Length: 317
Length: 253
Ligand SMILES: Nc1ncnc2c1ncn2[C@@H]1O[C@H](COP(=O)(O)OP(=O)(O)OP(=O)(O)O)[C@@H](O)[C@H]1O
Ligand SMILES: [Mg+2]
Image (cartoon, rainbow over all chains, first blue to last red; front, top):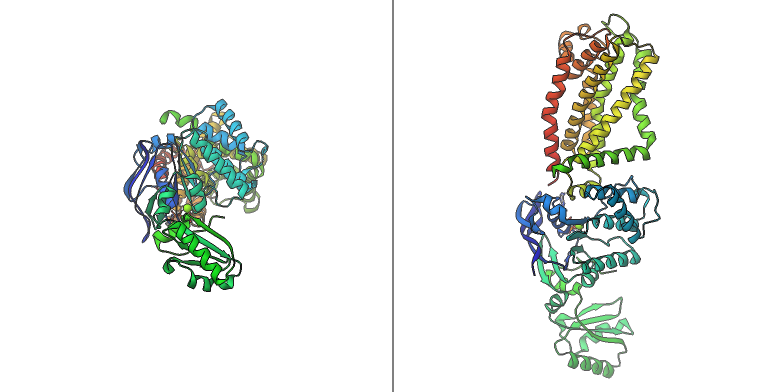
């Protein structure tokens, strides 16, 4: 397996703030790599460096076999970019945009037209007519932007928070598009604040915080790093949460309580012993439970565990 | 890479023309403004100081040159707006010829200037201005004016990238006006106080206006000025054209 994206020691400062602080990354050909991090983690800065828009202060980035700084043209031939904000001509219509980009990718006038029609059809934008992009909904604009980044069947596709601000249907459409691309051999680097999105789409995930990668691996590997499985107990009466925590045979330090959802959650080592112990203890104390489940930790818990920082990651919606 | 310089520039020019087609009113307003200035100075302000002969024959060439000078401001505003649009990121992430974005802008602005000159020459004719230098003189005059506009254009592009933000553009805008008016567009330098006359004489715009007057055969023309009206813009281009291209290539990187 060869690495299509290699970043080594990337640094970029804005004033006295380090947007990238020695970031290393490797992405294997044909894989989907998720870069997961909170606001201001450096995701967009990373994507801009890799897509030749920004020169790092230090470090080196190689994309599709070419240096992003010194061989920008060769990199640009091989990438597609869906930036965090729409990169479209707002005054022109969807077809005009795609045709223009097709010509700039040197497809030739006729092929650019054909390709524009194909993509409009594929992303459900065929009936937008001459309406300027300015008048598009957020979801339409995002789909057109994605279409524009696919004009040339890129070898490497960068998606910077592709579904932020989309409704569930729009998100599902983008996810479907990403999955179909991967079948075709495209390498995708995707940034997101949504744990669920990284979990759903990515083969490997890099957790990024304050401009560096704090953990790296498959979703399962990362989950294993917080110490294995967890047990969730949902009580009928939230008022009994305190009593239950005191009474259950669980590792008190690892227990977390969510009063709104009448939920308590704790790490376990021996799955079956924990399950039967909890059920028996609840029964004998007369505390009624709605649900008791064993599960793997969520990426959210992994992230909190690894960064030791609360409330920095949005829950997947 | 350079093999695509022409086709990419043409694609970017088409983009500007597509914008015109979407906003014809904006194009018209751009044409009407200098015509209004011409009419104002022709009818309201009246005869210029120190001009011998028909004032309108002095004024029209001056206004043509002034319109070309103000083009700097128009170009600068357009480029600043363009650079702050998201689409620039897409252009810069594509394997396009470097600077095609700027060349497209300059082609569209030059076309706009040709239309503007045509409109002003038409209105000038209507208010009594006459060409005394024949068709050859008229063509030479238009050529000099467009050359001057081309130099202003690349200064405008460069300043837009240096200034960067729309707030800074206003500062430059305020400067363009005195530079435009500290010229011989309306009155002869001889009629001004010594130092002012010198400044006005040295203003590249005055050089172009004087050469144009010469070609058109009106008052205020001096033979032998064509050289200066060619050299000045070329010198400015030699500085600002490469600066602008370089600046664009390294933009925000
Ligand atoms: N052009 C800039 N000028 C100044 N500071 C910047 C600039 N770009 C980024 N930063 C800073 O660098 C840090 C990283 O920004 P970046 O946009 O890469 O984060 P992000 O992970 O994409 O965040 P978000 O999820 O909000 O998009 C932030 O603190 C940001 O304020
Ligand atoms: Mg971002």
